[in-house]
Amino acid sequence: MKTLEWLAAEERLDAFCAATGMDLDGLRSRTAQPATLGAVLDHVLSDESLARQATRDLDLADDALLRARAALPGGDAPHWT
Image (cartoon, rainbow, N blue to C red; front, top):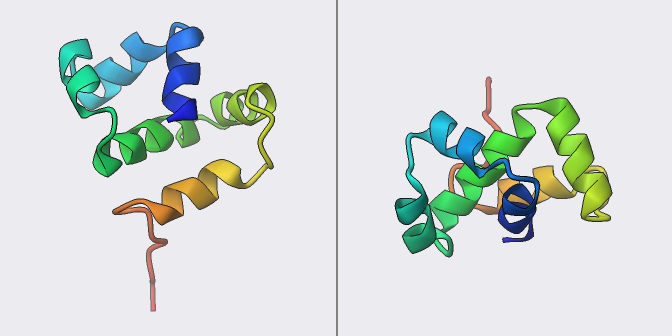
């Protein structure tokens, strides 16, 4: 949730909505859903500079976003074997 709030404060919600196809009303109604939070983290993690800025601004450990994503549905690492 902190990452979503950070996106809003950084005025990056439009980019998130454009990337996901979600509108702001839909986002508001789904903010607590794990799938939405996963999509937020996917969006931030898809851009290394954005992820670094988020971890710096939110005072998080370097791997905090990755660990948070792994804890949400669909966040498990793919197994190639």
